[in-house]
Length: 89
Image 1 (cartoon, one colour):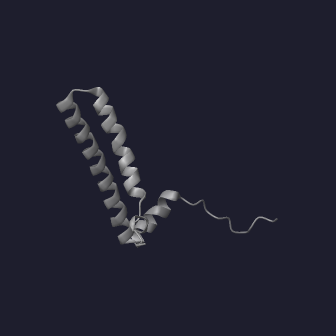
Image 2 (tube, helix red, strand yellow; image 1 turned 90 degrees about the horizontal axis):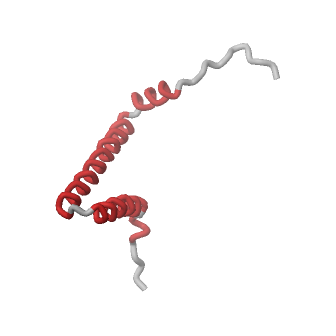
Image 3 (cartoon, rainbow, N blue to C red; image 1 turned 135 degrees about the vertical axis):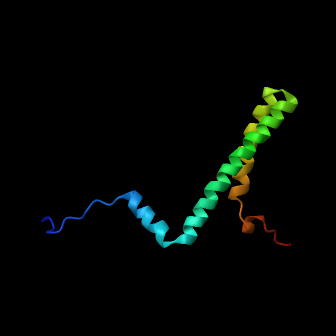
């Protein structure tokens, strides 16, 4: 195959995303909200672990709560309304 007369410029991934965010304000706001929400979730988890350890002074209980919290978050995030709907018999 012969090389084309006009070579394509390399695509910058950062420039592509910046253009996408500039053109779609709703997407930008959604992703910013998701980012801020994620920070809030982590701060909440750290606060719960601090309170559990301060009240119980038990590393075992701290480990149990720390292990149970991410499992609960991933379980609730994966469920959809349709999967929770029950059909009467």
